[in-house]
Amino acid sequence: MSVVICFVLTFSAFAAQGKSLVLAVGWNKPPYIMASENAGYELELVRQVLRRMGHQLDPVYVPFGRSADLLLRGHVDLALTMNERLAIPPEQLSDVYIHYQNVAISLKSNSLEIKDVSGLRGHSIVAFQNASLLLGEEFAAAASHSGSYVELPEQLSQVRMLLDNRTDVAVMDVNIFRYLASSLVEDPLSLVDIHRVFAASDYRLGFNDRRLIPLFNRTLEAFMQSEAHAELLKKYQFIALQ
Image 1 (spheres, helix red, strand yellow):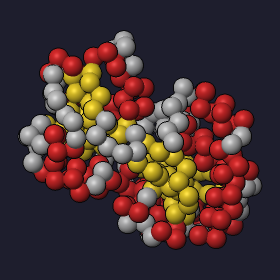
Image 2 (image 1 turned 180 degrees about the vertical axis):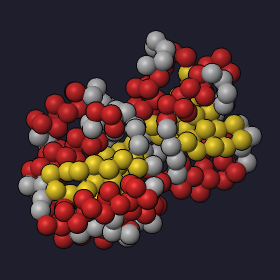
Image 3 (image 1 turned 90 degrees about the horizontal axis):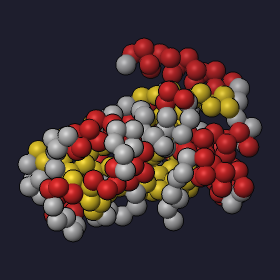
């Protein structure tokens, strides 16, 4: 990790002098983030908004749990997929730019009845990194009373564990599951039950320099109503949650 931080510090110093901003990005979360292609719906949305502001992006890919720490220490200019639950001061956060729809997913063959978050108690759960912080106290309590609970930074592993019946429940965003599972099996949604027990999670862009936030918010609002945003949704076959 020291190599990553040194790399980030070098680029952050450069960013302060020019228009290139270092952005901490969580590891692969297709279709939101596709690290190998330096692309994805979420990354491209933020890139296009900042480009309209006159800035370039230098993404640095780190485990999701490290993004907030790097931002708070001033090692990066921006951090993707942030909110108040990650201990980022509100004055360092933009308006909401994206909603994730986390769900609980189980195999149809197991016939699990999960009607609310408390219904997860007693089941083995594999979740995304920081889920116990981001999904609220009720989920954290259910996780602590599960048969087993693990959080993984690489979400394809979650999908594989579920499809191999090595966990009862996978907790993750429905778009991420659909995208990743489609690379492993045909018609993955026909194999699973989707338990919609969570509200949508709102995320904001974290800023080291809060003076950039008002312009970002105005530019974001205009972009979301533009044809460019409609084309971005179509490109990733993405369901935009309201």
